[in-house]
Image (cartoon, rainbow, N blue to C red; front, side):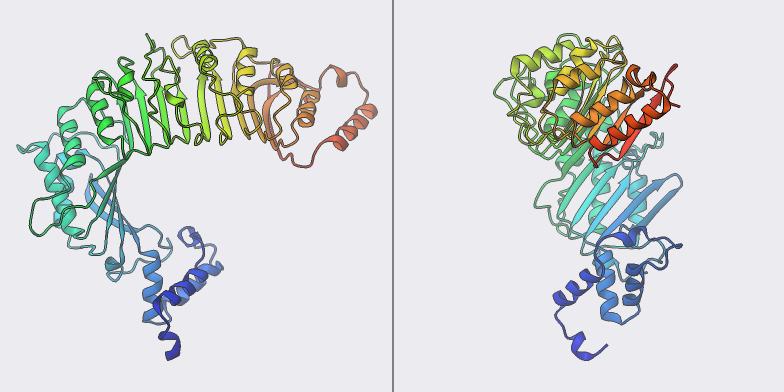
Length: 488
């Protein structure tokens, strides 16, 4: 390399590298596509000179994935964005790692196996400032607990973490396994991990400037709901994703309020998923403080259960952020929607995708007439929704009258009605009244009475006439075939 090019400032050379390596396609490079232009550029840079090699490794070695496997015991490390067909650099990347993503099972902390593996590791990551902990492996609880309590085990684990990452500044926790928090050892250890275990009181270890942030949580709401509620309240300021499975519906109000009635808010929560066991009796649904806004930043709501409140608790304050809504329609939800005017046209301007299902979880059957469910779904932000899914096993031929009545669906691009029986004439009519429609899923009910009586020549002329009046955007049609419907 000419000396003048080596003397370019590092930030200029980094811009050149960024231009050459635009995108993250290298991560998914395969051995059967060696003509990949980016791959050729990358390998060329690795072998040009020390300066360009260092820059190339620096770009793709910023994030390290560290997996703690306990059966058999192993500590494996991989660079998250390194090309899969190239061997990892031996040691030169360790000082370049800025983010470590650690995947393990929480029980491996309580039984000491994770600490043993970390303590035996000879490697350190001196520039790592961020740690993402993902409790996502599904390991069963072992019987090899020592006499030490769970708090001591957690503190030992974090001490070993701080040893291999001495400059750690930020810790984020992503919990994706549905543990039983009723286990007292687990609850005590988990709250310790969140509240104080990261700040080790030793002269050689600096305290974190910001406490650990639990960003994603998956848990069951069961007879130990008080522990679950306390953990949720503790993590509410930092949670971004929450998955709750209700095995028990007592005191659901504790999701958004303390035992004394003080409102609890989740200011950063963007995704909320609620589900429950089948045939679970909802009992009496609670109301909450009408001035509280527990979920002001929600972008997605997934409700695979009946609506758990008697008011508009889940929808308060997020009318400017909500983009996706999935829920079961019941008579009680319709009454709540009407009483609070939930889905009037001036609200939820960003809501683009809606999925509704006519289902009562307690009775495991549709709760309202099909026409009522369809009208309710079509009235949710009709001028802006782009994707609409309506599931109702009793729908059959009820869809078309309601579709013809609602003429405001100008932006609808995807209509998924797997239980609707539509004739070919109905489908053509939908394409006429939905000018932006790109995708349609339905059941085929044959040609329809108007077309079945035509001979071949007239039928061909009719199809040509249909082709002239349809728009050019439609791309995908998925049909189910039921009963005697003849589509030949």
